[in-house]
Length: 455
Image (cartoon, rainbow, N blue to C red; front, side):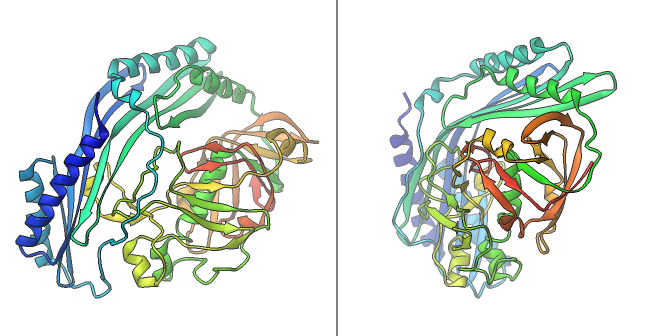
Protein backbone atom coordinates (compact mmCIF):
# COMPACT_ATOMS: atom_id res chain seq x y z
CA UNK A 1 0.00 0.00 0.00
CA UNK A 2 1.29 3.43 -0.94
CA UNK A 3 2.13 5.64 2.03
CA UNK A 4 1.52 9.30 1.23
CA UNK A 5 3.67 10.34 4.19
CA UNK A 6 6.63 8.56 2.61
CA UNK A 7 5.93 10.32 -0.69
CA UNK A 8 5.82 13.67 1.10
CA UNK A 9 9.10 13.03 2.89
CA UNK A 10 10.76 12.01 -0.36
CA UNK A 11 9.61 15.11 -2.26
CA UNK A 12 10.53 17.46 0.58
CA UNK A 13 14.00 15.92 0.76
CA UNK A 14 14.41 16.52 -2.98
CA UNK A 15 13.30 20.12 -2.51
CA UNK A 16 15.75 20.68 0.35
CA UNK A 17 18.61 19.40 -1.78
CA UNK A 18 17.50 21.48 -4.76
CA UNK A 19 17.24 24.69 -2.74
CA UNK A 20 20.81 24.25 -1.52
CA UNK A 21 21.97 23.69 -5.09
CA UNK A 22 20.19 26.80 -6.29
CA UNK A 23 21.77 28.96 -3.61
CA UNK A 24 25.20 27.55 -4.41
CA UNK A 25 24.64 28.41 -8.09
CA UNK A 26 23.98 32.04 -7.27
CA UNK A 27 20.23 32.47 -6.70
CA UNK A 28 19.36 35.10 -4.10
CA UNK A 29 16.19 33.12 -3.39
CA UNK A 30 14.28 30.33 -5.06
CA UNK A 31 11.12 28.25 -4.87
CA UNK A 32 10.62 24.64 -5.95
CA UNK A 33 7.26 23.04 -6.71
CA UNK A 34 7.19 19.26 -7.27
CA UNK A 35 4.20 17.13 -8.22
CA UNK A 36 3.97 13.35 -8.15
CA UNK A 37 0.40 12.62 -9.16
CA UNK A 38 -0.74 9.35 -10.74
CA UNK A 39 -3.86 9.37 -12.86
CA UNK A 40 -6.19 7.27 -14.97
CA UNK A 41 -8.27 8.86 -17.72
CA UNK A 42 -10.89 7.02 -19.76
CA UNK A 43 -12.89 8.57 -22.58
CA UNK A 44 -15.75 7.10 -24.57
CA UNK A 45 -16.78 8.82 -27.78
CA UNK A 46 -19.02 7.30 -30.49
CA UNK A 47 -18.68 3.95 -28.75
CA UNK A 48 -14.88 3.94 -28.82
CA UNK A 49 -12.93 3.77 -25.56
CA UNK A 50 -9.55 5.41 -24.97
CA UNK A 51 -7.96 4.52 -21.62
CA UNK A 52 -4.70 5.99 -20.38
CA UNK A 53 -2.67 5.62 -17.22
CA UNK A 54 0.06 8.15 -16.53
CA UNK A 55 1.14 10.87 -14.22
CA UNK A 56 1.79 14.55 -13.65
CA UNK A 57 5.35 14.19 -12.44
CA UNK A 58 7.68 17.13 -12.65
CA UNK A 59 9.23 20.20 -11.09
CA UNK A 60 8.77 23.94 -11.50
CA UNK A 61 11.37 26.43 -10.27
CA UNK A 62 11.25 30.18 -9.71
CA UNK A 63 14.60 31.86 -9.09
CA UNK A 64 15.26 35.39 -7.86
CA UNK A 65 18.47 37.22 -8.76
CA UNK A 66 18.26 40.84 -7.67
CA UNK A 67 14.85 42.00 -8.90
CA UNK A 68 14.76 39.52 -11.76
CA UNK A 69 12.57 36.43 -11.56
CA UNK A 70 13.17 33.44 -13.81
CA UNK A 71 10.97 30.38 -14.22
CA UNK A 72 11.61 26.96 -15.75
CA UNK A 73 10.18 23.45 -15.43
CA UNK A 74 11.20 19.91 -16.17
CA UNK A 75 9.35 16.63 -16.59
CA UNK A 76 10.40 14.08 -13.98
CA UNK A 77 11.64 14.41 -10.41
CA UNK A 78 15.03 12.75 -10.48
CA UNK A 79 17.95 14.83 -9.15
CA UNK A 80 19.16 15.56 -12.69
CA UNK A 81 15.75 16.87 -13.76
CA UNK A 82 15.42 19.08 -10.69
CA UNK A 83 18.92 20.41 -11.32
CA UNK A 84 18.01 21.14 -14.96
CA UNK A 85 14.96 23.17 -13.89
CA UNK A 86 17.02 25.17 -11.38
CA UNK A 87 19.80 25.95 -13.87
CA UNK A 88 17.25 26.85 -16.58
CA UNK A 89 15.38 29.19 -14.22
CA UNK A 90 18.64 30.89 -13.29
CA UNK A 91 19.49 31.27 -16.97
CA UNK A 92 16.03 32.75 -17.58
CA UNK A 93 16.74 35.59 -15.15
CA UNK A 94 19.39 36.88 -17.58
CA UNK A 95 16.68 37.61 -20.16
CA UNK A 96 14.11 39.04 -17.73
CA UNK A 97 13.48 42.67 -16.88
CA UNK A 98 13.65 43.85 -13.28
CA UNK A 99 10.38 43.58 -11.39
CA UNK A 100 10.46 46.52 -9.02
CA UNK A 101 7.26 45.29 -7.32
CA UNK A 102 8.73 41.93 -6.36
CA UNK A 103 9.30 41.47 -2.62
CA UNK A 104 9.58 37.88 -1.40
CA UNK A 105 8.38 34.32 -1.75
CA UNK A 106 5.86 32.98 0.79
CA UNK A 107 7.12 32.98 4.38
CA UNK A 108 4.03 31.94 6.38
CA UNK A 109 4.52 28.50 7.96
CA UNK A 110 0.86 27.57 8.55
CA UNK A 111 -0.87 24.73 6.70
CA UNK A 112 -4.56 24.02 6.18
CA UNK A 113 -6.43 20.74 5.83
CA UNK A 114 -5.83 18.68 2.73
CA UNK A 115 -9.39 17.39 2.28
CA UNK A 116 -10.69 13.84 2.56
CA UNK A 117 -8.19 11.23 1.42
CA UNK A 118 -9.63 7.99 -0.01
CA UNK A 119 -6.82 5.46 -0.42
CA UNK A 120 -9.20 2.97 -2.07
CA UNK A 121 -8.67 4.94 -5.26
CA UNK A 122 -5.07 3.70 -5.40
CA UNK A 123 -6.17 0.14 -6.16
CA UNK A 124 -8.72 1.12 -8.81
CA UNK A 125 -7.41 0.05 -12.22
CA UNK A 126 -8.08 1.36 -15.76
CA UNK A 127 -10.09 -1.83 -16.32
CA UNK A 128 -12.27 -0.95 -13.33
CA UNK A 129 -12.92 2.53 -14.77
CA UNK A 130 -13.79 1.05 -18.17
CA UNK A 131 -16.31 -1.29 -16.50
CA UNK A 132 -17.80 1.71 -14.75
CA UNK A 133 -18.28 3.84 -17.85
CA UNK A 134 -19.76 0.87 -19.70
CA UNK A 135 -22.44 0.79 -16.99
CA UNK A 136 -23.22 4.43 -17.74
CA UNK A 137 -23.27 3.72 -21.47
CA UNK A 138 -25.56 0.69 -21.13
CA UNK A 139 -27.95 2.53 -18.81
CA UNK A 140 -28.27 5.40 -21.26
CA UNK A 141 -28.63 3.30 -24.43
CA UNK A 142 -31.16 0.98 -22.79
CA UNK A 143 -33.21 3.83 -21.38
CA UNK A 144 -34.81 4.85 -24.68
CA UNK A 145 -34.34 4.03 -28.35
CA UNK A 146 -34.11 7.75 -29.12
CA UNK A 147 -30.75 7.99 -27.30
CA UNK A 148 -28.24 8.36 -30.12
CA UNK A 149 -24.89 9.16 -28.53
CA UNK A 150 -23.24 8.86 -25.15
CA UNK A 151 -19.94 10.61 -24.45
CA UNK A 152 -18.19 9.92 -21.16
CA UNK A 153 -15.00 11.22 -19.56
CA UNK A 154 -13.77 9.70 -16.31
CA UNK A 155 -10.61 10.48 -14.37
CA UNK A 156 -9.13 9.25 -11.09
CA UNK A 157 -6.03 10.74 -9.49
CA UNK A 158 -3.91 10.39 -6.39
CA UNK A 159 -0.58 11.71 -5.28
CA UNK A 160 1.34 14.45 -3.52
CA UNK A 161 2.48 17.98 -4.27
CA UNK A 162 5.30 19.63 -2.33
CA UNK A 163 6.59 23.20 -2.20
CA UNK A 164 9.65 24.72 -0.59
CA UNK A 165 11.64 27.93 -0.76
CA UNK A 166 14.81 29.42 0.67
CA UNK A 167 12.79 31.48 3.18
CA UNK A 168 12.02 28.38 5.23
CA UNK A 169 8.86 27.03 3.59
CA UNK A 170 8.71 23.23 3.32
CA UNK A 171 5.16 21.95 2.88
CA UNK A 172 3.20 19.21 1.14
CA UNK A 173 -0.33 17.97 0.53
CA UNK A 174 -1.84 14.65 -0.54
CA UNK A 175 -4.55 14.50 -3.19
CA UNK A 176 -7.20 11.95 -4.18
CA UNK A 177 -10.11 12.61 -6.50
CA UNK A 178 -12.49 10.95 -8.92
CA UNK A 179 -14.69 12.60 -11.53
CA UNK A 180 -17.09 11.51 -14.27
CA UNK A 181 -18.74 13.70 -16.90
CA UNK A 182 -21.22 12.49 -19.49
CA UNK A 183 -23.14 14.15 -22.31
CA UNK A 184 -26.08 12.28 -23.83
CA UNK A 185 -27.86 13.16 -27.06
CA UNK A 186 -31.34 12.09 -28.14
CA UNK A 187 -33.09 12.57 -31.48
CA UNK A 188 -36.73 12.45 -32.53
CA UNK A 189 -37.74 13.37 -36.07
CA UNK A 190 -35.76 16.54 -36.82
CA UNK A 191 -35.21 17.53 -33.17
CA UNK A 192 -31.98 16.80 -31.32
CA UNK A 193 -31.41 17.50 -27.63
CA UNK A 194 -28.40 17.00 -25.38
CA UNK A 195 -27.96 17.00 -21.61
CA UNK A 196 -24.99 16.46 -19.35
CA UNK A 197 -24.34 15.21 -15.86
CA UNK A 198 -21.44 14.48 -13.59
CA UNK A 199 -20.21 12.98 -10.35
CA UNK A 200 -17.21 14.41 -8.55
CA UNK A 201 -15.51 13.99 -5.21
CA UNK A 202 -12.38 12.82 -3.42
CA UNK A 203 -12.81 9.09 -3.93
CA UNK A 204 -14.03 6.48 -6.40
CA UNK A 205 -17.06 8.03 -8.12
CA UNK A 206 -20.40 6.25 -8.24
CA UNK A 207 -20.98 5.08 -11.80
CA UNK A 208 -24.41 3.51 -11.25
CA UNK A 209 -27.43 5.66 -12.02
CA UNK A 210 -25.72 8.47 -13.90
CA UNK A 211 -26.66 7.11 -17.33
CA UNK A 212 -30.34 6.76 -16.40
CA UNK A 213 -30.41 10.20 -14.78
CA UNK A 214 -28.99 12.08 -17.76
CA UNK A 215 -30.87 9.99 -20.35
CA UNK A 216 -34.18 10.77 -18.62
CA UNK A 217 -33.39 14.48 -18.63
CA UNK A 218 -32.43 14.37 -22.32
CA UNK A 219 -35.52 12.50 -23.50
CA UNK A 220 -37.83 14.90 -21.66
CA UNK A 221 -36.34 17.80 -23.60
CA UNK A 222 -37.53 16.24 -26.89
CA UNK A 223 -40.99 17.60 -26.01
CA UNK A 224 -39.74 21.19 -25.87
CA UNK A 225 -41.80 24.04 -27.28
CA UNK A 226 -40.90 27.63 -28.17
CA UNK A 227 -41.28 30.06 -25.30
CA UNK A 228 -42.68 32.73 -27.66
CA UNK A 229 -41.75 35.55 -25.33
CA UNK A 230 -39.38 38.47 -25.21
CA UNK A 231 -39.10 40.51 -22.03
CA UNK A 232 -38.32 40.11 -18.36
CA UNK A 233 -39.52 37.31 -16.13
CA UNK A 234 -38.26 35.41 -13.14
CA UNK A 235 -35.68 32.73 -13.73
CA UNK A 236 -34.68 29.85 -11.50
CA UNK A 237 -31.05 28.97 -12.16
CA UNK A 238 -30.25 25.43 -11.01
CA UNK A 239 -27.02 24.59 -9.16
CA UNK A 240 -24.91 24.36 -12.32
CA UNK A 241 -26.18 27.46 -14.10
CA UNK A 242 -26.03 29.48 -10.87
CA UNK A 243 -22.42 28.40 -10.46
CA UNK A 244 -21.54 29.46 -14.01
CA UNK A 245 -23.18 32.86 -13.53
CA UNK A 246 -21.46 33.52 -10.20
CA UNK A 247 -18.10 32.33 -11.50
CA UNK A 248 -18.29 34.86 -14.33
CA UNK A 249 -19.46 37.59 -11.95
CA UNK A 250 -16.71 37.00 -9.38
CA UNK A 251 -13.71 35.66 -11.28
CA UNK A 252 -12.44 39.07 -12.39
CA UNK A 253 -14.18 41.38 -9.94
CA UNK A 254 -12.66 39.87 -6.76
CA UNK A 255 -9.30 38.91 -8.31
CA UNK A 256 -6.51 40.80 -6.56
CA UNK A 257 -4.54 41.22 -9.78
CA UNK A 258 -7.53 42.88 -11.47
CA UNK A 259 -7.99 45.10 -8.42
CA UNK A 260 -4.33 46.20 -8.46
CA UNK A 261 -4.47 46.84 -12.22
CA UNK A 262 -7.73 48.81 -12.02
CA UNK A 263 -9.77 46.27 -14.00
CA UNK A 264 -12.24 45.21 -11.29
CA UNK A 265 -15.77 46.56 -11.20
CA UNK A 266 -15.63 46.17 -7.41
CA UNK A 267 -12.20 47.71 -6.75
CA UNK A 268 -13.68 50.51 -4.58
CA UNK A 269 -16.60 48.51 -3.17
CA UNK A 270 -15.12 46.86 -0.07
CA UNK A 271 -17.64 47.17 2.80
CA UNK A 272 -20.26 48.38 0.32
CA UNK A 273 -23.64 46.75 -0.29
CA UNK A 274 -23.45 44.98 -3.65
CA UNK A 275 -26.13 42.32 -3.12
CA UNK A 276 -29.31 41.44 -1.29
CA UNK A 277 -29.02 41.23 2.53
CA UNK A 278 -29.52 37.45 2.60
CA UNK A 279 -26.61 36.70 0.23
CA UNK A 280 -23.47 35.15 1.73
CA UNK A 281 -20.58 33.84 -0.38
CA UNK A 282 -17.21 32.48 0.71
CA UNK A 283 -14.18 31.24 -1.18
CA UNK A 284 -13.65 27.93 0.59
CA UNK A 285 -10.24 26.37 0.11
CA UNK A 286 -11.02 23.85 2.86
CA UNK A 287 -14.11 22.05 1.53
CA UNK A 288 -13.42 18.39 2.49
CA UNK A 289 -15.14 16.75 -0.51
CA UNK A 290 -13.97 19.19 -3.19
CA UNK A 291 -11.40 17.60 -5.55
CA UNK A 292 -9.55 20.94 -5.64
CA UNK A 293 -8.94 21.14 -1.88
CA UNK A 294 -5.31 21.09 -0.69
CA UNK A 295 -3.59 21.96 2.57
CA UNK A 296 -1.63 24.68 0.77
CA UNK A 297 -1.98 26.76 -2.36
CA UNK A 298 0.45 26.36 -5.22
CA UNK A 299 3.15 28.60 -3.74
CA UNK A 300 2.95 27.22 -0.20
CA UNK A 301 0.47 29.47 1.59
CA UNK A 302 -2.21 27.78 3.72
CA UNK A 303 -5.56 27.30 1.99
CA UNK A 304 -8.36 28.96 3.96
CA UNK A 305 -11.98 30.12 4.01
CA UNK A 306 -12.28 33.72 2.84
CA UNK A 307 -15.60 35.61 3.22
CA UNK A 308 -16.37 37.37 -0.07
CA UNK A 309 -19.90 38.67 0.48
CA UNK A 310 -21.57 38.83 3.91
CA UNK A 311 -25.21 39.87 4.10
CA UNK A 312 -24.82 41.43 0.66
CA UNK A 313 -21.72 43.44 1.65
CA UNK A 314 -18.42 42.90 -0.21
CA UNK A 315 -15.84 41.94 2.41
CA UNK A 316 -12.69 40.68 0.67
CA UNK A 317 -10.81 40.22 -2.56
CA UNK A 318 -8.67 37.13 -3.16
CA UNK A 319 -4.89 37.32 -3.43
CA UNK A 320 -1.73 35.35 -3.99
CA UNK A 321 1.58 36.29 -2.40
CA UNK A 322 2.75 38.74 -5.10
CA UNK A 323 -0.39 40.86 -5.43
CA UNK A 324 -1.20 40.82 -1.72
CA UNK A 325 2.15 42.50 -1.10
CA UNK A 326 1.54 45.11 -3.81
CA UNK A 327 -1.98 45.86 -2.57
CA UNK A 328 -1.03 45.81 1.09
CA UNK A 329 -3.62 43.13 1.86
CA UNK A 330 -3.39 39.70 3.42
CA UNK A 331 -2.61 36.67 1.29
CA UNK A 332 -5.78 34.56 0.99
CA UNK A 333 -4.12 31.38 -0.33
CA UNK A 334 -5.46 31.61 -3.89
CA UNK A 335 -2.35 30.86 -5.94
CA UNK A 336 -2.97 28.12 -8.50
CA UNK A 337 -0.82 26.65 -11.25
CA UNK A 338 -3.15 26.33 -14.20
CA UNK A 339 -1.72 24.00 -16.83
CA UNK A 340 -2.33 20.45 -18.00
CA UNK A 341 1.03 19.60 -16.44
CA UNK A 342 0.65 21.80 -13.38
CA UNK A 343 4.36 22.10 -12.64
CA UNK A 344 4.82 23.89 -15.99
CA UNK A 345 2.90 26.98 -14.86
CA UNK A 346 3.67 29.87 -12.56
CA UNK A 347 1.03 30.55 -9.89
CA UNK A 348 -1.97 32.75 -10.76
CA UNK A 349 -4.83 34.05 -8.63
CA UNK A 350 -7.80 31.70 -8.89
CA UNK A 351 -10.87 31.13 -6.68
CA UNK A 352 -10.60 27.90 -4.71
CA UNK A 353 -14.24 26.92 -4.29
CA UNK A 354 -17.06 29.46 -4.47
CA UNK A 355 -19.70 28.50 -1.90
CA UNK A 356 -23.06 30.18 -1.46
CA UNK A 357 -24.77 29.82 1.91
CA UNK A 358 -28.04 27.94 1.36
CA UNK A 359 -31.38 29.59 1.92
CA UNK A 360 -34.36 28.20 3.80
CA UNK A 361 -36.55 27.11 0.86
CA UNK A 362 -36.41 23.75 -0.83
CA UNK A 363 -36.32 23.37 -4.61
CA UNK A 364 -40.07 22.73 -4.88
CA UNK A 365 -40.86 25.87 -2.87
CA UNK A 366 -38.75 27.98 -5.21
CA UNK A 367 -40.87 26.73 -8.09
CA UNK A 368 -44.24 27.20 -6.39
CA UNK A 369 -43.41 30.83 -5.64
CA UNK A 370 -42.79 31.68 -9.31
CA UNK A 371 -46.06 32.69 -10.95
CA UNK A 372 -44.63 33.14 -14.43
CA UNK A 373 -41.04 32.29 -15.33
CA UNK A 374 -38.59 29.67 -16.47
CA UNK A 375 -36.15 27.16 -15.00
CA UNK A 376 -32.74 26.89 -16.69
CA UNK A 377 -30.39 23.95 -16.18
CA UNK A 378 -27.12 22.35 -17.20
CA UNK A 379 -25.06 24.79 -19.24
CA UNK A 380 -25.13 28.44 -20.29
CA UNK A 381 -23.58 28.76 -23.74
CA UNK A 382 -21.54 31.92 -24.25
CA UNK A 383 -20.85 32.97 -20.67
CA UNK A 384 -17.15 33.19 -21.53
CA UNK A 385 -17.98 36.08 -23.89
CA UNK A 386 -19.34 38.30 -21.09
CA UNK A 387 -17.81 41.76 -20.87
CA UNK A 388 -15.83 41.60 -17.63
CA UNK A 389 -15.42 45.38 -17.52
CA UNK A 390 -19.05 46.46 -17.99
CA UNK A 391 -20.52 43.17 -16.76
CA UNK A 392 -22.97 42.85 -19.66
CA UNK A 393 -23.65 39.30 -20.79
CA UNK A 394 -25.87 37.40 -23.20
CA UNK A 395 -26.04 33.61 -23.03
CA UNK A 396 -28.10 30.79 -24.48
CA UNK A 397 -29.78 28.12 -22.39
CA UNK A 398 -30.75 24.98 -24.27
CA UNK A 399 -32.11 23.19 -21.19
CA UNK A 400 -35.14 24.78 -19.59
CA UNK A 401 -38.75 24.54 -18.49
CA UNK A 402 -41.68 26.93 -18.44
CA UNK A 403 -43.17 27.71 -15.02
CA UNK A 404 -46.80 28.84 -14.80
CA UNK A 405 -48.76 29.46 -11.61
CA UNK A 406 -46.05 27.84 -9.52
CA UNK A 407 -45.86 24.64 -11.57
CA UNK A 408 -43.43 23.34 -14.18
CA UNK A 409 -45.38 22.87 -17.39
CA UNK A 410 -43.36 21.99 -20.48
CA UNK A 411 -39.73 21.97 -21.57
CA UNK A 412 -38.78 24.94 -23.75
CA UNK A 413 -36.60 25.41 -26.79
CA UNK A 414 -33.37 27.37 -26.47
CA UNK A 415 -33.71 30.87 -25.06
CA UNK A 416 -31.28 33.77 -24.79
CA UNK A 417 -30.78 35.47 -21.42
CA UNK A 418 -29.21 38.91 -21.09
CA UNK A 419 -28.25 40.86 -18.00
CA UNK A 420 -25.36 42.31 -16.04
CA UNK A 421 -22.93 40.26 -13.97
CA UNK A 422 -22.36 42.93 -11.36
CA UNK A 423 -25.99 43.88 -10.87
CA UNK A 424 -27.20 40.30 -10.55
CA UNK A 425 -26.38 40.10 -6.82
CA UNK A 426 -29.13 42.65 -6.21
CA UNK A 427 -31.56 40.80 -8.49
CA UNK A 428 -31.77 37.70 -6.30
CA UNK A 429 -35.29 36.91 -5.12
CA UNK A 430 -34.70 33.66 -3.23
CA UNK A 431 -31.94 31.13 -2.50
CA UNK A 432 -32.66 27.41 -2.23
CA UNK A 433 -31.42 24.97 0.39
CA UNK A 434 -30.49 22.39 -2.26
CA UNK A 435 -26.71 22.98 -2.22
CA UNK A 436 -24.69 20.71 -4.49
CA UNK A 437 -20.97 20.29 -5.07
CA UNK A 438 -20.29 21.55 -8.60
CA UNK A 439 -17.14 22.35 -10.55
CA UNK A 440 -17.39 25.89 -9.18
CA UNK A 441 -18.08 25.04 -5.55
CA UNK A 442 -21.02 24.28 -3.28
CA UNK A 443 -23.95 26.01 -4.95
CA UNK A 444 -27.74 26.10 -4.36
CA UNK A 445 -30.43 27.00 -6.89
CA UNK A 446 -31.21 30.74 -6.99
CA UNK A 447 -34.18 32.74 -8.29
CA UNK A 448 -33.34 35.95 -10.19
CA UNK A 449 -35.52 38.74 -11.53
CA UNK A 450 -34.78 41.46 -14.07
CA UNK A 451 -32.95 39.51 -16.78
CA UNK A 452 -34.21 39.83 -20.35
CA UNK A 453 -35.32 36.60 -21.99
CA UNK A 454 -35.95 35.95 -25.67
CA UNK A 455 -37.06 32.73 -27.26
